[in-house]
Length: 122
Image (tube, rainbow, N blue to C red; front, side, top):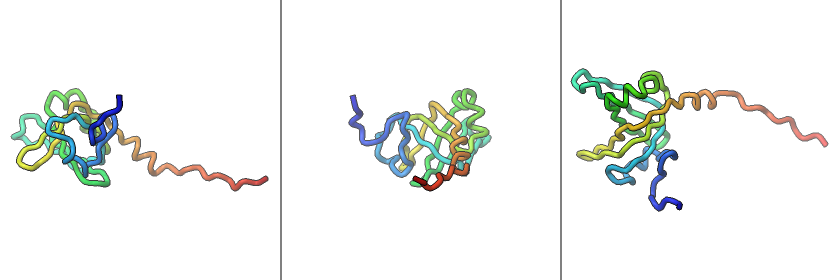
């Protein structure tokens, strides 16, 4: 049965510029370049990640349990796909991470030369 939701549902990613569309608590996926990773000493093991796509930025909260589960992606990923829940507080939208995937390999595909096709010779 097709979804009637006005936003892409996982595994499809929603553009960051449309994060105001899903309601608070909706399960979504976002993907983007990692701009910032923050692990403040006062945050009790919580990591904050800022992702960027061509439409804007998204703020991701990674609780300690999720960090332990997806540690390699959180630490090493240059680009991430994050599936989680939308949380809105005081006009700020966050994604509470439930699953984190390192999609850095996609960046490598962008710079890989594409094969050229020889002109058709009858």
